[in-house]
Amino acid sequence: KDIPIGSKFTLRLVEANAFGFQVEAQKRGRKTSNVKNGRKTLRFKADGRAIIEDVDDIMVKVIDRINGLLETYMGIHDSDLAQQIWDLSENKKNPSDFAMAIDESEIGTFNFTDEF
Image (cartoon, rainbow, N blue to C red; front, side):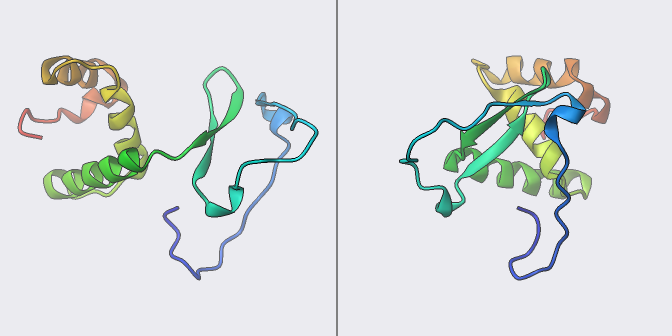
């Protein structure tokens, strides 16, 4: 999604099972969902499963906002880091729990300030 519209790119396909990912076989029958709208994403889970998820518009907006903050405070634009920060925010009841989750995660090495 970071590639500008109209740009050329190379897509390399590899056999998922060769790398330990288990992709569920498509069910037979007619599809009822509209996949042409580009609002789904393929996620590879740590346990090797791959699932297709609907794109959450709120999540996309928040990740863009997090990227803006990363650029303002650190001078970087990193969608993966922004996604990690978003993932850490899930199920946190208050800012202190969220800050603690970041500090205790692998991205805690960035030493984000309380202001951030």
